[in-house]
Amino acid sequence: MNAARLLVPASLLLLVGCASAPPEIPPSFLPHPSETGVEACFFRRLVVSFEVLDHSNLIVYAPPPDDIFHVRIEPVRNLSGKTLIAFAARGNRICGVAGDEVFFEDRRRAPRYRIKAVSLLDPEAVLLLRQRAGLSERQRPPAE
Image: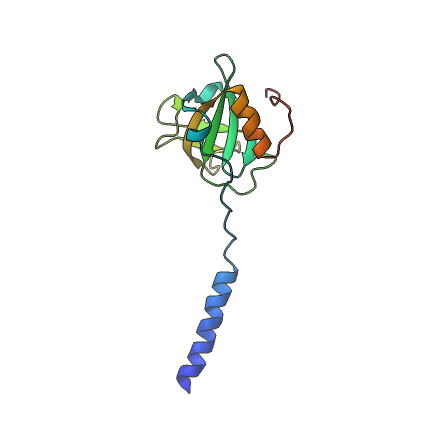
């Protein structure tokens, strides 16, 4: 009888613990950067602007002169509406290698997210990616 009393509270604790876990971020349905362009790098301090495609894909605009990159990052909650982007790396370039990170807030301890891959896009690939992400036909966001 004592064992039955102990099992009920333990099962309730298990259910409460599972119920409080945040829902998982769904997988991206956009192609991997290796499928949209050629592997590439950009200088982290020269980014002009960016667009959010989904919770793990960005389009980044950087010189020279008008290069456009597909950047795959680890999934991030609530990326829509972000207006600031910054990059951290072991060197000056972002290539999607170990140590490359992105963050979206202007504060010292802003969460950083791992960059998984980077590819250089041609104009046709940009349009296809934007269409698959459900974005308008607008070619490029304004420079910030």
